[in-house]
Length: 310
Ligand code: TXA
Ligand code: MG
Image 1 (cartoon, rainbow, N blue to C red):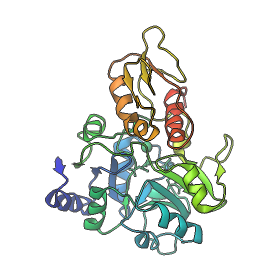
Image 2: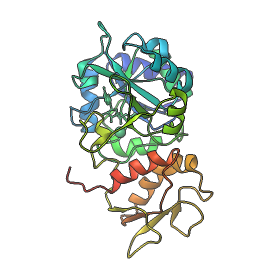
Image 3: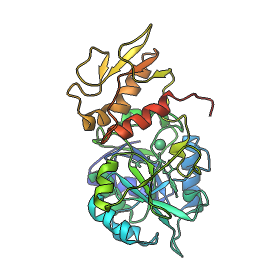
Image 4: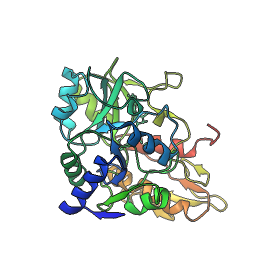
């Protein structure tokens, strides 16, 4: 069922969550596939709807930093980052607190929990109306391109979920940045908050994930965000049958940002991949600078281009 992002739609969505059903909802990053994080059956059905490997833990979405502190052990660094970037596209991984009530399917059995306070008005209204933590991965079949519109969600998961809370396209367009604070402060996934901004607020560098490090954020699985067609990166021009996804003032089939603006490019990224994927032709992508949100864009593009056998 399609619900509109008005008080009535939000109340209905919160009721569905209370019944243990799944609701896809708009956030500022991508659409999330939400279920009650304290209800094991609801969380199990998230994994089933996505076809997601069960070792890949989920982010618990909450309405405020205060709500987050009920579930995780807080720290000075967590406080600093929450003050600077919440609500917003930042997820923190922190040690679980005793008596937390979160289903162990959310954490995939880890003793840490990923928590995020989204900034999007509809997501916040839903979290407030529901009154508890909502587990929500991106609302796409596992391994495929993430959804930034309700149409993307319908195309990928339609028929497998109770409702979609439609609130137009997502403004940021790439998933949240994930910072691990349970051990050495580290960047687990680049995303909607630039690494440079996080390091400047913390006054320290984050440990960067290296190939060979323990797999702690399965967004780190190599092939992910993958369209059906092959993807070729750093392309100056298309070859053969390729469609070119451009960046900056280049002749191309679709442009992430003619002005060369990385924030605009991030907002357009997944929609562009959905659109080009529908052409059935191989996809070539212009070079994208690796600073600011460019780091998250390049991370997603590298995974989209990775060999599919993982
Ligand atoms: O922007 C976002 O973060 C979106 C919206 C819906 O909020 N959500 C999202 O969720 O991207 P998902 O499930 O697609 O990605 C969550 C990532 C995964 O790579 C997962 O492995 C990692 O977070 N993660 C979750 N819990 C973790 C934990 N305890 N330790 C390390 N990584 C964790
Ligand atoms: Mg995802």
